[in-house]
Image (tube, rainbow, N blue to C red):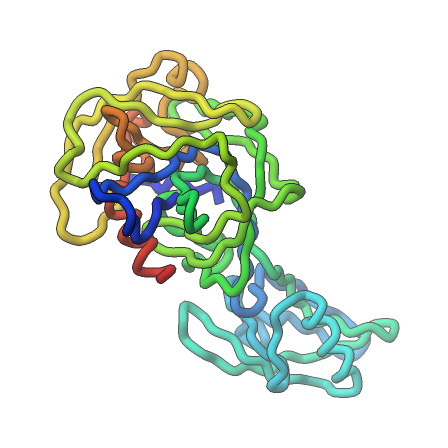
Length: 331
């Protein structure tokens, strides 16, 4: 069984002045927190409202389900919880309102009843306006300030769908520790305080989270990006954070390479060989996704998945593929 590593940067896109035509990227490895906002607000559950006259649960009585994305109330577009509350107050004298929502991409209209309890409207809905998570930065472009992270998509646990970003940000995040779950895949514990913003999140794709960094530190050193045919079976390193903010290098062994014409997040197969990393997390752990893979001084890929029944082994995306994905979505 293969599991994604989400818990739920990219080089110069043109390099016109580089005569060797090598693409130079800054390898990441930092832990980041991300905040993504969808086109609307997401229903996370429902509860029963009871007054003297009526009992009402929107899931049971109006077919409004957990994971539905609510886009409008009586034609008024909803983008935040503040708008959600504000618009309902406009209809305080109505018994019901029409809402527009999507369920697994399908547009739907539903009637939502408004019950008054001590002068306050109760809808019976629990909702949220954002998705929070942590992961690992993969690479930066010091010239264009474009970055890539995670190496795979971000899914909303409530809707079970890939988040369609309308706005989003990434933040500096400390690793508080690695939870070693014995025979099961471990988990990174990271801070999601969202205090120090690093940049914007623009696109959530099957190949990573992409956006622009506000400022790439001048101390960061770019290295060449390896083309797919330059990646070899054998020894390599990954860069990641296991405590605090410090990026460390750990040894891996690339065990198999899948030649690709189309982008795939499982082009590189590898095994963790570093005893220190094995003692910390027992192998690959959730939250490591996006960790850059370096071989022979070149940035060759990023960690994407772990094998749940063999957590020292996993997959990575070719950096060349991740770079192409970024060009396709951000150009």
